[in-house]
Length: 196
Image (cartoon, rainbow, N blue to C red):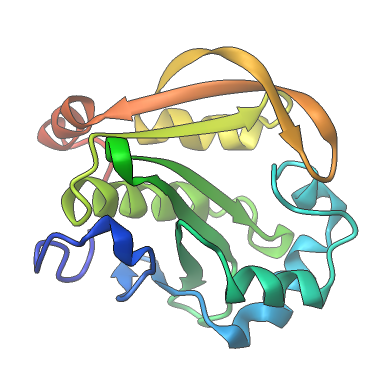
């Protein structure tokens, strides 16, 4: 679960992660300028970049610095395993304040694949979105070829909405799958003990 999640409901206009979320194995903290080199190193892996919609390829330090300096309407957390503390990836909520919805995004660098970090981070950020931000729904999309992301999506409890196409910076227009979770679904999952 998260630290001090119910301390206060946050105004969606703040648009910045202001505190850390803590899970059994991870600390999700606000992304910082000092993360640029680690982000650039992890996303410079083509197999990571090709699955992300808004990441250019090749990816450089300047791209990471620009993202950190201005990630607009996204609340971005650095995913850091408690053992070691190095940055393993990012998890974010891209907000649509007018309708109190967000789109979750996440990625994990190759050295950290296969540990379940994406699922653990996503579940914590989903809880943050529904509790601290009082969101009505959270959406997520993935490329149809991204089986790892699809597993994270199912484990978190999202339901399938349909297929479509998305425009990506690195790979052009690609086939995608779209999923959603509304507040009532999240509440049920929490009551059943799922999504921990």
